[in-house]
Image (cartoon, rainbow, N blue to C red; front, side, top):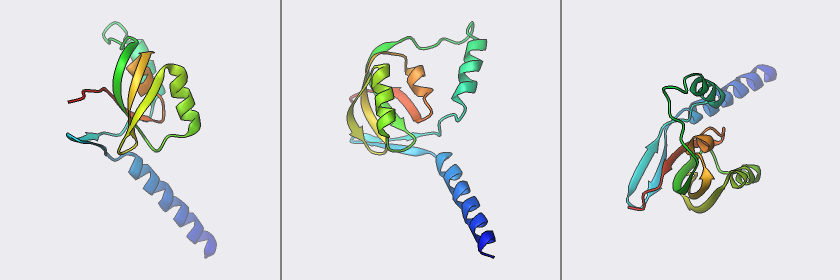
Length: 126
């Protein structure tokens, strides 16, 4: 009986985690709220598809400027290091799990393809 309970508990927790990660999240700004959809869980498949149809898709070129970036969960130290190595400086935290970030010659597509990144969009101060 205890083993069955443990299996059911583990399955329930796994289902809860999967359901939570597939739900929308919000970014709460002073001027309003942005609802973000779940990130595509197969970034590698997206990159492969983009490479196979490069004639019809335009990949974003490296840019410098301010962006709003939301993450799947609170950032870990290794993830911060990876972002900095790409040329992303996190400037200011924005609820929930988001930052205003300065991109220094990095493609928004490349940042968005990271498995811990949920959403990337250029930042409009207004």
